[in-house]
Structures are given as C-alpha cells and as structure tokens.
Image (cartoon, rainbow, N blue to C red; front, side):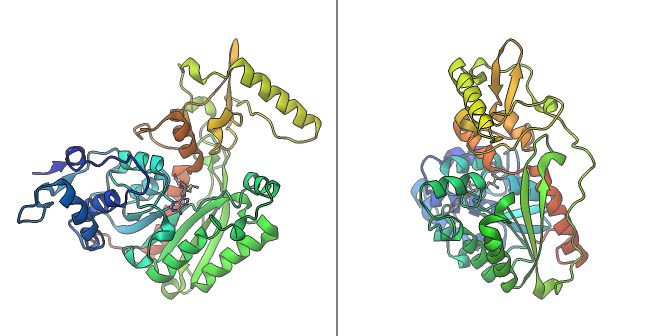
Length: 406
Ligand SMILES: C[S@@+](CC[C@H](N)C(=O)[O-])C[C@H]1O[C@@H](n2cnc3c(N)ncnc32)[C@H](O)[C@@H]1O
C-alpha cells in the first residue's frame, strides 16, 4: 500500500519556514529517490533529520513509507527516461518543463526560502540552498543540467542602477557575478550530456560583448559545443519576453556535430492578453489615485526627456511587456485598463498564466512574493520546447533509455 506525500509531510514536519533548511532538502530529495541509486547521495542527511522526528526502530525509518504516492500538483513522472538537475530553480519553471518531457529531477538548488516554499508545494521537494556552498561531488549524475542563473548583474536595469551606485557588475560583482562559475564547476565535474542555460537578452551585449565572450569561451573550454539564440516567450504566452537561451552538448559524446536546432516559432502569438485575464478581480488590485497620478506624471516627465520608459497599459488583443521581479512595486509595466476606474495590476494567478503555468500551480505565498517569483521565472512552455529539441538530439544518439533507467 502506498503512503501519500501529504500525510508524510505532516508526520515528518516538512514545512519551509526559515532559510537554509538543508535537512528538509536532504529528506525530500531522499524520499524522491529512496528506491533508486540516487538515494545514496541523500541518505545520511535524511537519516540525520529523521532521527529528530521519528522513533527509531530496527528497520530503516522510511521502510513503511514506500512507495510514496506523490499527491502534489506536479509529481515526478512514473517512468522517467532521463535525469536532470534544476539550478537557480526559483519556483520550478524548468522543472515543470523537463518533468513534462519525462525527466526525473535528481537535484535542485534555490536559496530563497519563499521560492523554496512554492517549489515544495508544487513538486513535493525542498531545494538545497546556496549553490556556492555545495560541493559538486555531492550532486548526483544527470543527463541534462538546466538553470536560469541570476540576471541582476547583467540586465540593463541592474547595470545602470549598479553603475549609479558606483559598484561593479557582471563578473566583477563579488556576490552574484561568480554564479556562472558554479555552473561551470558542476559541468566540469559531472559532465552531463547537455545543458540549457537562460538569461536576460542583453547578456550578449553586456560590457561590449566581453561577458558573453567569457561565458562562451568557458563553456567551450569545458568541452561543450554551444548553440545560442534570443527567443521570445510571446509565441507561447501573451508576453513579450526575450531571453538568451544557451544550449550545450558534450563534445566527448557528440563530437561537435550534433544536429540541434532551436524550435521554430509560429507566425503569430497564439494567445492574447484577453485570454488570460480574470473577469472578476478584487478591488485591492486597482491602483490608488495617488499611485496612478504618480505614474502618469513620471511617464510625462520621461517622455519630455525623450525616454520611452513609463507605465504600460495593455492592449487586450495584444501581448504584454516583460513581467519583471519588481512588478510588486507598482505594477507599472503591465497595467490593465478598467472602465470608469483607475487601471489595475495583474493578480498573481494572471502572472502565472503570463508565464504559461497551468491553473493547478499552487501559490502558497503573499502577493508580493508571488510577483517576485513569477517575474523571475520563465515562459515555461517555451523552455519545454527547447528541452524537446535537446532530447531529440540525445535520443537520436540513443543515449537515454526508452524504458525507465531506475
Ligand atoms: C532568474 S531566477 C530563476 C528562476 C527560475 N528559472 C524559475 O523558473 O522560477 C534566479 C534564482 O536564483 C536564485 N539564487 C541566486 N543566488 C543563488 C545561490 N547562490 N544559490 C541558490 N540560488 C540562488 C534566486 O533566489 C532566484 O530565484
């Protein structure tokens, strides 16, 4: 008889409350793999936590809990055909995309505990924390590495703000700029067959192209053949969201001649804003007179100065601007016109749809946190399509099992 994850969750006190709860990461990673070899990476940590919770009996503490029925919105696939790891996982946009393709996630890292909370509610797994503190030898073998590494040091907004503060950015930024190198050291040690990295569009032009040069040269030096392209989410959801997508294949395996191409975009965006908006929305999402006045004055001032920046009222028949992590502040980049009222901002659920998330995605955090999380995330179906193209290459080489590898 199988045990439900929701019951285990209560019994084992799986509740993300504070940052850096690596014990819950060990436990949930272990539970996801308790019946296969990956478990060895997590058993000791899980045992350590279990000792504090369950009465120790002679047989292993988890014996009676298996197999687990994953009653979460997005359970792991029953017969996975490949393994992947989810770095800088946020709320799991990549995880959902790659699970949909039949992948089993064997390691995930995300240090923001609000994002960890959302991740656990949807996937039944708590990500490990700070990736810079995780030794690459502690990460299980995998076929594909995926990750959208933080973009603040590379984005136009981030760059100008940091310049204004007289601080360095990109690779010189001590706190964030080195996170790419965490990806590099994991690639070097684990040698996945392929990877998918995602970042803001202007990563390519940042610092006159030097940043991207360092990134691509590092990846090539590591023995990966890379393909990159700027892709727009608007072909999958009603949002203009351009991101650079970098895909790499291990030269030792594919010899640099893999037949990879990015998915072709359809001629027209398949959805418009009207398709994702709720008919009835609480008043709290309508802008106050003060804020609306302020946004209009601010836009006027900038227009006079020749800057295009200002609020963005959406066209119901079109697509929105890019949802950013700062949307929670005033919602100015995507405002919904309302008859006889000030415009309103999107609800968190509408933000989820704008990123192509399905309706059953759980949002267990405050609106502020939810806006940040969706603003940081990806247009999920676009990443799924890129993942599909990667898998076609790997499958062609018959490198992943048609049957479950576990
Ligand atoms: C651009 S977001 C990626 C979002 C993700 N692709 C998604 O679908 O939600 C980058 C994420 O990296 C996380 N992060 C930043 N530094 C980190 C670190 N040192 N260790 C682990 N996660 C980190 C941030 O908290 C943020 O959620």
